[in-house]
Image: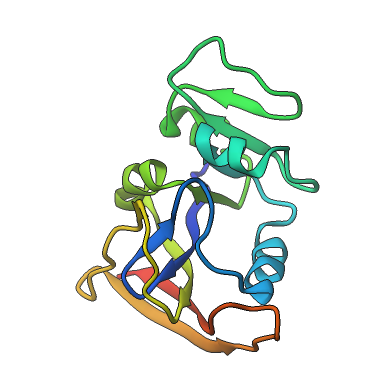
Length: 164
């Protein structure tokens, strides 16, 4: 069995803020559409707090939640005690998506092969941050502006980074 590609997908502001009080401190509708397009049909791995902020399993994807609490359960999700155990359980997949939150991103970063980054062009206040992406480790292979809409609170760019 081969190991799936481990990809992180994240929206992060220029100051690397990814969350504030359990929510994203911006609205960029094209980012949510992009998230769905990239993750559909792939296993998604998230921490318990991220799952609880979403409030339900995301359709069309195997939803996996990482929690240290052995009694925690939710309908429609598979629960694992560690990221390593969850990745092992997805070994039949080509690519597995790490969707957050902050703690899980830190744990996943050393094993990630790719990062799908929506860079939000703002510096909001926050309480959760995404780790730095040093250019010595990560190479940007794709970048494109995200078209805005009048409902959006910030502009953004979409980037793909590969481990060098």
